[in-house]
Structures are given as structure tokens and as C-alpha cells.
Amino acid sequence: MNSKNAKNSFEVYGAEDVKHCCRVLEGAKDGYDCYGFGINELVYEGIANGFNNYRISFDLFVDASNEVHYSTFCTNSSNLFACIGLRNKSHCILNRQYTKEEYEKLVPRIIEHMNSMPYIDKKGRVYKYGEFFPPELSPFAYNETIAQEYFPLTREQAIEQGYFWKDPEPRNYEIQIKNDQIPDHIKDVGDDIINKVIECAHNIGTSDVPKCNEQCTEAFKIIPQELAFYRKMSIPLPRLCPNCRHYQRIKQRNPLKLWHRKCMCGGAQGNPSTGSGHSYRNAATHIHGEHPCPNEFETSYAPKRPEIVYCEACYNSEVV
Ligand SMILES: [Zn+2]
Ligand SMILES: [Zn+2]
Ligand SMILES: [Zn+2]
Image 1 (tube, rainbow, N blue to C red):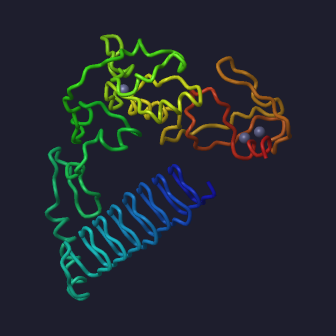
Image 2 (cartoon, protein in one colour):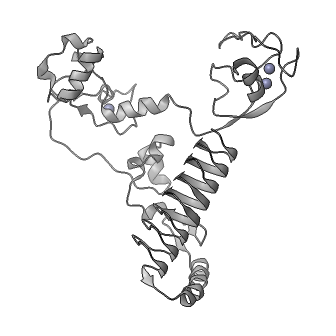
Image 3 (cartoon, protein in one colour):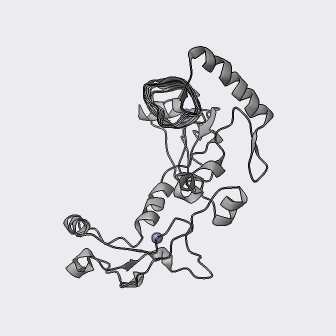
């Protein structure tokens, strides 16, 4: 929304000149390959960098800083290389203080070394200067991160691609309410539901329907405030554990993916039903007149979805 030159980017609000970025906030400029940043300028391959950064790269959680590279959790700093947790510092390498002159001499030597003796991971992938940290140095397993929400993998796929996988920890509980015993209506739920161990619908894996890949906890409980809320709003009890519910909500959103498509406006008659989807009759005249609209564009609506997708001009003619 309200953005300019945002290419292959998602959830971008009021940003300019960004590419391959996701979750970008008002005032961001010149970002590439980043997830989550605010007012930053010239930011490359970063995760969750905060506000007021300038010229930073390969960082995580860097805030109010400039010329900070391969660093994490640093704030209000400048000219850092491979540092962690520094505040109000400048000209540091691996958290060690140098003079400006030493720093400017050392960093190019380290970069040269990174290129001549790069890190090579278990899969044989080479990480020279210019690559983000390898996933095998991540303290988190693939399925513990939001990567699994946006780009779900099976355990086998993740391990094959060189990621860690966190297997569920064995727990000691007994399911007290089987999933098919959950009452349909909240009025049939007694106070004794509190603290009962309820089975998630996804726990019932059969050879035909395997268990889900949604970090299912297999069972869940209801807390008193939650029960009071369901009663007040007359909402039935959930049938899925919180993790599986979370994944169902994500499925309702469009994926972080674009398809090249043609405007579906067929001219004066609009978009008559093709049998599978909706139909729509135009109420206004469009710039392309009687003929089908020739515009093509990128959209996060997959071609086989039922929605009618118009180009911006046709959409504006009808809606605005
Ligand atoms: Zn579940
Ligand atoms: Zn159009
Ligand atoms: Zn049109």
C-alpha cells in the first residue's frame, strides 16, 4: 500500500524502491532481500532490523545504526563488523574496539579472507562475503520459525535441504476428551471442561489421511477466560490445537507468491461466468471500451482461484 517501486514484495506499507522484501513499514527506502524493517535506507539481506538504519547488510535486529554488517542485536552504533549486542559503539570487529584507521584496514582484509577461505556447509554450499549466515548456524530449527508457515516443508524435505528439524518432545498426558466427543454447541459445555485434555482433530492420523504438518501439539486445554469468551460470543469450542488453528488462518491469506496474469475484464459486458467462477457485469465504461482489456500484471491470486481479477485501471473504474 502507498508504495513506489516495490517488486516481488509483500506486506509493504509506504515504502520506496524495495525488492524481495516482506513486512516493510512506512518510510523504508532501498531494501533488498529483507524480512521486516522500518525506516531504513539501503538495507540488504536483513531480518527484523528496526528503525533509522543507513547502509546495513547481513544483520538481524539492528537499530538506529549505520554501516553495520554481519551483526546482530546492535543499536545506536556505526561501522561494526561481525558484532553482537553492542550499544553506542563504532569501529568494532567481533566486539573488539579498534581505531578508525585500524578498522578501515582490517575489514577489507577480513572480506578478502572470507572470499579466499569461505565457510562451506555440510551440503557443500559455499558462503563467501555477500551471503547471509548459513542456516546450519541458526539456533532455530526450520519448523520452529515462520519459514515453516510461509514455505512449509516436511521433516524429510527440510533435512534434505540442510535445515535442522525439531521433533516433538515426548509428553506425559492422557487425552480426556476425544475429538468426536467435543459438544457442537457451547451451551452443552460444562465448567468441568477447564483443565481437561482435549484431542486435536489432526491427531487422528490414518493411512488415508496422514497427520498434518502444522506443528500439531495433538492435544490442548481451554482456560477459564477463553470459555467465558466463547459463551459470551456463543462460539463453539475449537476442534484444533492452537498451532493447527494458526495454520488454518494463514491458509486463508494469499501466499507470498506472484503470478503473471491478464486482466479478466472482457469489455462492456464485464466478466460473464465461465462456469467455474463468479460472474461480474461492468457498471462503468472503461478506457479499453468494448474490447477485452489487454493489461497484464503480477498478482498473488493464483490463476485457478475463482475470484475475478481486474487490472488496477479496470478495478478503479468499477470501485473508485
Ligand atoms: Zn493440532
Ligand atoms: Zn483491465
Ligand atoms: Zn475493463
